Length: 123
Image 1 (tube, rainbow, N blue to C red):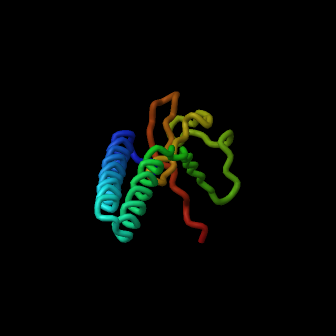
Image 2: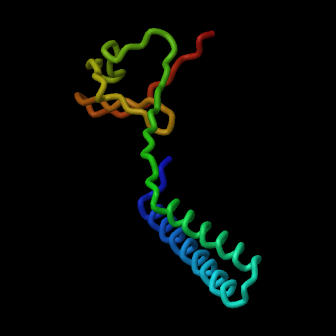
Image 3: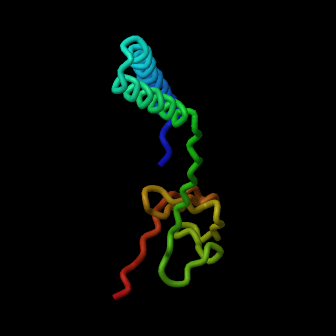
């Protein structure tokens, strides 16, 4: 499932904030390394600055759109053009059949009946 648009914007804003925060501390360590002339501060500053830039680059990347296809395999020879309403006997087309919560439901356009198709046991 794809997250809601609001959730994506919150995650992006959080990632930008964390990237800027980490990058800021990388700059602080670089400035401190220049003043004190120490190698560990320089190394930590470069690592933090690189991590901050990486987080910001990651936040700018686009999430690929996902398409979910739900396929229902019915056992036996079942064709949409052969299905008929169990109340009025009218032929049903593919628009009359929907899948909700894993079940196959029929909405008869002629009599307005709504019911679930239930498969009989094979034994």
